[in-house]
Length: 362
Image 1 (spheres, rainbow, N blue to C red):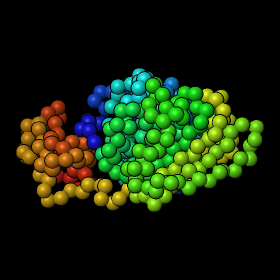
Image 2: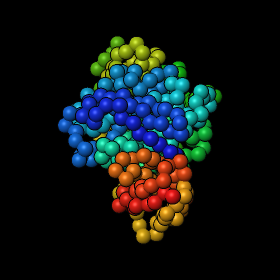
Image 3: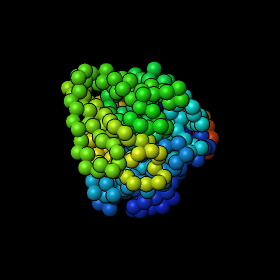
């Protein structure tokens, strides 16, 4: 994970079910909406679902389309809808309108929900539509934070993500795509990257699944939508891999009749948000994906005039607390923490989840 200074601001109380908030990253304000179920309390380690919108869309718009809030209420998890800069995600697509550090944004968003809401770091999930689906694949391929499972709807891998995909972890992957998608063509293209089949084969090799999948024709109860879904499962790998291929389907969320969700034919044979959650639910990262403080970590010098050196040699999460216990700086680093801008006084530094260490800023 990339080193980044982050301040987390909640605009309303934790008890609010649906809340708008912002993160300031290096002076840039990034916004999001989150939903906490009525049964949630801070002592629970509930799963975290991050849902990323498509190009030109917003987190609020996607929330209204998918209604993941209702599923979160029924299943006791927290769902977050972040906003990409310029209504886009920097997913290294062949045609892109964003250069933002969106890997850093999503990683730090997940970290702050761990710290402030007690979400389970082993049960973090990504869902994305279109450009957001591209971003979910990029995060799964490139992030040093473990996301236990991802689901992409009408998104894919860009050529760059496909070439660079060497994941540190092995997430479960679900991919939903229509064969008549005119925005992100099933067979790939110059503007969108590789084909869906190439994307699935990349994950099959990463997850070491069987070469021959199990194919199940899903119920085709809605004949007027002129499309039919097929569930293709690759078995016996290190994690689950599934493709729901919609013959005749367009650039849409299956099961959601809306005029603003996408383009083309909407398959109405299954409700994709529920099918996605059923796939994600229960997936878990390995316990060793969370770093804990060990005897090798040292923080020096103490007292300091502004630079704290970290001896770990690889990425660690850090938080700087004021003398009264408020988090004033947090982020990720592998070598040093810059506190030159802090006033002279006593602070506490916490690395990963260890006991905070008292330091003196001179």
